[in-house]
Image 1 (cartoon, one colour):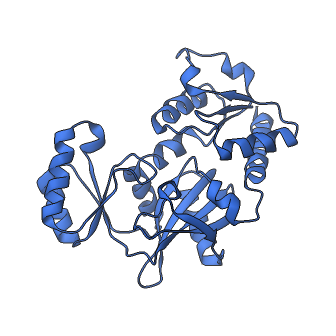
Image 2 (tube, rainbow, N blue to C red):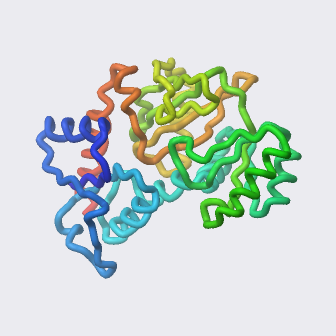
Length: 285
């Protein structure tokens, strides 16, 4: 097995320990040290499966697409990573599957974005189509702020700032919910609590156990299936009417906060799932 990772974080250390405990031979593959021939590569003869723990969405998209094209199974698949790494594509996939999400609009010009925000009603949330850890996410409270942010993004230029992903603002009760899906199982759910309206653990939110109700489990599994399944973190918001709304699905989830908050063997469950995928792939050959 090959494990693609740019950095060895607490999650990767736990994964490596779980692999070693099961006697699995694996190589850590640093994406920045790889160069792959586009006409075919020796990796297809070396690994029965490659597990991606890459931080860079762009690197993951290209690498996994190459590997899948050569017949090497990956966790997650290139198609799932492409969907989950782009919020526009994620929301579209969720909507097609009937998954409840906050109202979302995509605009391609400043005036169109301003009109969309006016129709949606302030405050709204402006996000980059591609990004993680709550970076470049803004709560837009009024038109004056909207104009400043939108024109600033246009001045910065580049593809990251040329598409305006605008989402309904859902007032949080000081928390959101993250559910970890591993294959056909929801391994756990946690609350991510913060005094800030952005509740990412990367921004200082704290994790605590969340009851895994049938409704929550069913919705998390449905969201995971909508983007192709695998090892995925489904982020959910609690609407004012009590409904659960899926906000994002993450293809390379961190779980260092959950390791302290829940009793589940997270890395072990992930490794067992990946090994099952490797065995099933070998049987299909």
